[in-house]
Image (tube, rainbow, N blue to C red; front, side, top):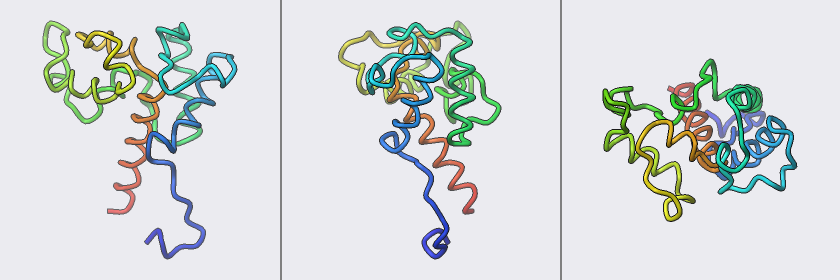
Length: 148
């Protein structure tokens, strides 16, 4: 039981817990000062990240949290537990459930951007906070699986 083990350290699980880690990893991956990365900062739209930066960021996040594993695709991380056909339809458009998943991850951008229509729209809209939410959920899922 976690509470009974004095050496147990709770892993960060909420977006608020994980955000400082995401901020540091984003800054390192993009070689920018951490002060430029706020919760609403968009990884691609504002920081001009490339696909190489994604791989670097995910590697850094995995080293820091152990929550990324062998996933090197932001679309897969955004999709979460949804099956691919539940996330996007055959024409490549987000389904209703896929759109709801993306909108939930982008609370800071709901009022300022149009609704994402495709997985690519979702990826290009990702904010530092959304990445923190994704990582936090993955850490929580790992913790729950470890204690079953």
